[in-house]
Length: 133
Image (tube, rainbow, N blue to C red; front, side, top):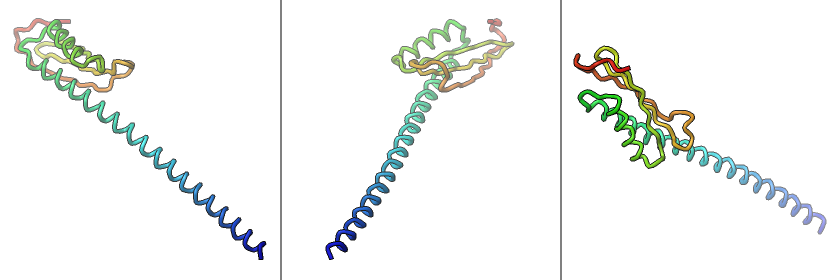
């Protein structure tokens, strides 16, 4: 009789170990999913911040009457100071005929290898502007 009780408790113990291992596996999968979701959320937040910076720079350039390269550089420097070394804004501009085309790039200051956000704008400039290249 004692032999039957010990075999039942061994079976129960094995079943209990299997259940605990199953829950541990499920917990590991859930934690992995939450970590990935947090990473995606942080990337989305960073993209939103940089897009707002790029849009703000675009509106600054568009609000200038006849933007020169020097005025654009001053606006970029001001924007970079406001970012508090978190992001870096760069603008590449060119004037062709009566059209200013500016490409705005926003980089993470810590790893400025790849831009986070890029925005291209065009502004019509009446015929009084000289070609700056």
